Image (cartoon, rainbow, N blue to C red; front, side, top):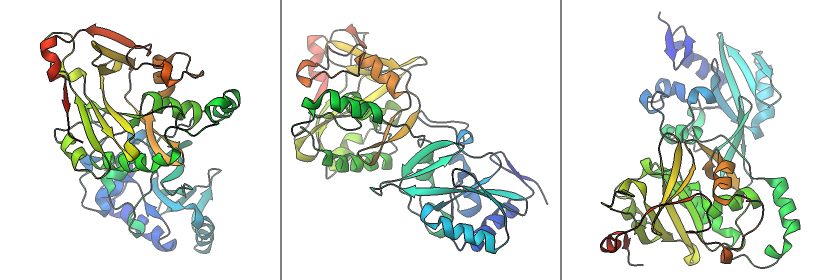
Length: 385
């Protein structure tokens, strides 16, 4: 017999931990899912280094800050809550229930935390509370008690699951204060969210974190929706997540049309290739969508621009949170309000698109040089639509 340490959890043997998980699943008639990534290697042939916290990628939250330190994390769908309770009672198990509707069950001296999963109305994502923090993840595909089919993707979403909300109370007051902006037909209909959901999934499959950006981020936070007079959608992605075949994948997709790529290759000493990358695409009904790549150093983050040569500088963006936009899961910077305030200043008052210029209105714009005439042709690539 030897002691096993599973990402900080102590058990007499790994076999004992697996035995307790299987035993609880049988008692609860397979109504639970194993969703604790620290135990992947006990269930499936998945390498532990995929989920370790020693080398977090940008945007990720440490698993040790998410999971219970001395319990095996399991889950059940809230519709099965009463059945779970009755089964716990019928088997005379040692258990207790918490105010967040989760259960702790002790089997063979091992603690199992059963977390209720609630499916959103749109059935796009799952809500749950873990260590008093509300979290949301895309809907889980599962195979009985084993848990998620794709453990790697599940862990990816778990590390970006901390929930932050739009300003619902402010959004209601905003609509009352400025009814003129909500009386007509919006330029972009709410139905576009289905295309944004599709883009979200498409990006995640390619290891990218699509975060709401610029006016799309502002509309989510201030109005809990899409700004009625905006004409485009904006996302930003960490530059570390870019890959060479990204434009090819865009062109091969069935719902995105690639139009332009901005990428300054400069020897001027002002803005180097690692400082600017942007793709302009078109989605449903010819709606423009900009995909900006986000750069950073130890103290700040920035988006590059080609009006002259500019940087739009933000507080350091290094953690991704999840939110609800029109009933669907989207990703945002965890410091979203700081990002918005840095760009817009007084974000609580409307500024119509006709009075807003992307290259002059932002408060965080910094001019860092000019593009020499002989280099302008190299600053962008135009694709056939």
